[in-house]
Image 1 (cartoon, one colour):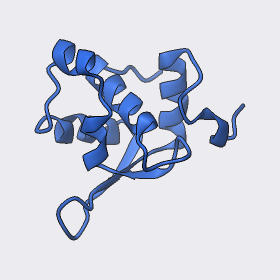
Image 2: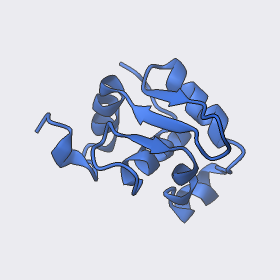
Image 3: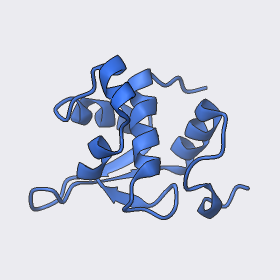
Length: 105
């Protein structure tokens, strides 16, 4: 079983909340992640815009997301993998924000 840090879980929640994806596993713009992390998570976990790259890299190394470097600034993207979606759903122990389109319910 894959273990998530609190920072990784906060980032997965932010990806789920992003206005740029209709489905949990849709590709979203990376810049939208920070704006979808709650103020409480930013304070308690010390997440900053600069720390997002490392958190995303950790999730990528675990196979929970795929990231893509865009050609221009603000064109980087990230996608929750199917494995990442399952780990995320287990971790939040609740129905994700974009649950209806994932196809496992």
